[in-house]
Amino acid sequence: MSIVWVRNKVRAYTIFYCERGMIPDYLMLGHFTRDLLPDGSIAPGGTAFYAARTGDKLGKRVGVVSAPVDLPADWPDSIALSFRPELSPPTFENRYTPEGRVQILHTDSGMISLADIPPDWQQAPVIHLGPIAAEIPEAFVAAFPNALLGVTPQGWMRSWGELPGPISYHPWQPTPDILAQIDAVVLSIEDVRGDEQLVQMYAASCPLVVLTRSVQGATLFLHGEPHHIAAFPAVERDPTGAGDVFAAALLVRLHETNDPFEAARFAACVAAGSVEGRGVSAVPTRAEVEQRLQQNELRVSEVKVEW
Image 1 (tube, rainbow, N blue to C red):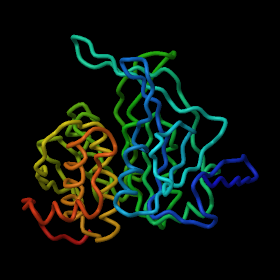
Image 2 (cartoon, rainbow, N blue to C red):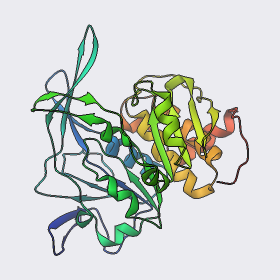
Image 3 (cartoon, helix red, strand yellow):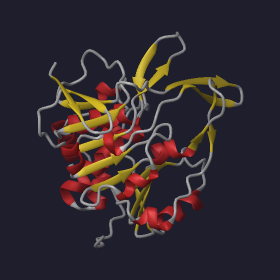
Image 4 (cartoon, rainbow, N blue to C red):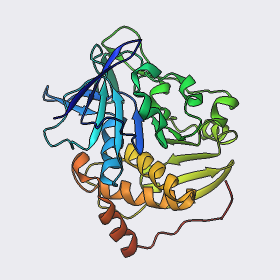
């Protein structure tokens, strides 16, 4: 393991698995989580966990800024990590009741600031804001004007009281100016509790919004106009993290092609592959994605529009 200590005027941060001066192709900002499982064991998770692994599998240099967490032994050395040593990751638990799932937050974590992001990393061409527990300031949308900026706002839709305690939903209601500074928003129909009007409000100001609908595919809003994206055929075994995989793949391909429809088709293929096995290891490689795309025809209501 290569460890590089870097100190700035505000605080120290630790970078693991990183060459000096390396600029990630894909920068993920958001905490890894500690997920409390029914048997009492702890597993890492969160948007950062699935999105970073997706970017790596697709051949990109990936960087993650997070609170420190114990990662699996087979976690790739190629993913660069910048940890705030004084923070601890948020801890989540899912409890299943007759009324449905209740999500419990056991421990919170601190905010990520610009000072926590290595200066070279701030020049990354693709930056993904993936708050899991409101740890990313909304003001970050204006901090990276030269990047393709993607947002998965799930963590901005959560609120809680005394810990440990249940997480409550509250709609994310950014201003039109905030939305206009984001290149792509990706979220699920579950994230918004079925509130399609809220998503349409996002799409009125953000140039690209994708609402995923599990096996029903997704709706891609391009400058407010909706287009159906069909789900890619898959034999589902474990859907955990599929939305995060979709978002990461979409941003990667969007940067490569500047074609929202091609990016959505690609992301649907990657996400479909990710649900056919257990855990993050099922995320397909670039070669596997390309092979799957060649073997399957995916119908997309595609309208070529300059965006």
